[in-house]
Amino acid sequence: MASCGWMERRRAELVIAGAFRQALEESGLPPHPGGECPSPDCPCESMTDAMEARAIEVAADRLGIDVAELR
Image (tube, rainbow, N blue to C red; front, top):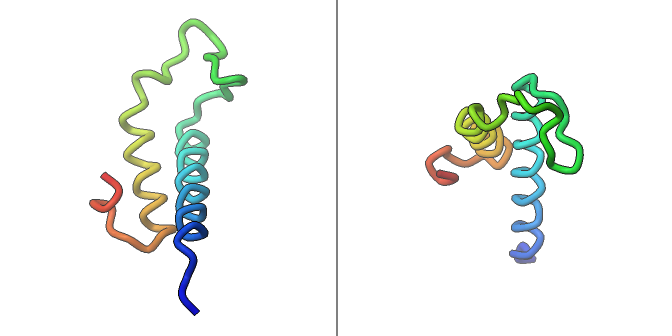
């Protein structure tokens, strides 16, 4: 039985979203309810590149692919 491309894509989307959640948790940033910064001095913008890089590492590991495939 051939695998369903839609299901593979959906799994990858869930893995990537989970990887970003993990990177956010690991960063120590406070929650951002509704996507809004919790305080005016929130450092999240200065950390975006580092969090994105970490999310890519996590997602690649979970998907069993090379990091370069997600960059």
